[in-house]
Image (cartoon, rainbow, N blue to C red):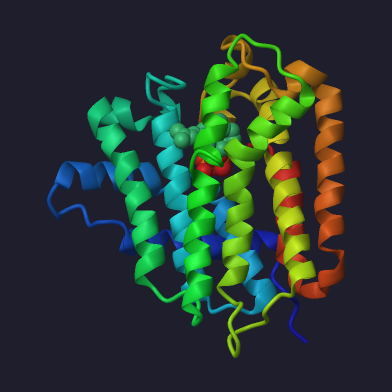
Length: 305
Ligand code: GRG
């Protein structure tokens, strides 16, 4: 009997493989306009925890999806995430100079290039979803495109970001803070899980989930997404810049409402633990196939960076 890989082995192998997928799918640096393509590759490659792609791979494993299909879905989600970081770091938003341990895109290149990098990564994400077969049922594939669009647009990540920018210096209630983060951070994390699962939902290629199972996966994504943000707030207040690879302590400095400022560190940690439990509960009916999703929930809550 072979022992299944540890989470560390599984995640490192997937991260390394995925890096090559990204290298292949991003525009090559020798193709015009070279500077823009170079900046796109700078912003996406060789950095980040790749939590969203790993969630897509884990959900793909749950349903026995073809990994080549999940590669595309995972890339689309990671490109949207990378675009959001590039734009978020710009002077008109969070105005940061450090990301993934390196100068932010607008510092390394310039502001106009950073704007275009974000725009181009977003377009490429949808191009990939439209260009590759991810599901034999074209209607289901169209649903996947719609899912990513709504998770990243004004009713998802961009909307959450708008609320975030508007909340500086304001006192938000807990439900308001939750609403903001379910959109800003949670929507894309949940989309990563669902897109991975949808790559395996057509007949003959993996297991199609029923409505109840999809609902549980939805709930898992929601809890994991919110837990990710609560932990992000705790790390921002407790970890140092070198460990995070981005400027630590910014939330307090910018007078932003966070789970830590609202609840205090201990209560924020307790909330993360409760969300962790809820996320694991949502997976309880799935059996051994959900092992990697469970491990990712653990990683999201227990991570130190
Ligand atoms: C500009 C439309 C638009 C949206 C920006 C995601 C976001 C919205 C802003 C990033 C600011 C931020 C620190 C959000 C908190 C949670 C978060 C998304 C952290 C960064 O994600 P990680 O930790 O980053 O997965 P890596 O570098 O590991 O990929």
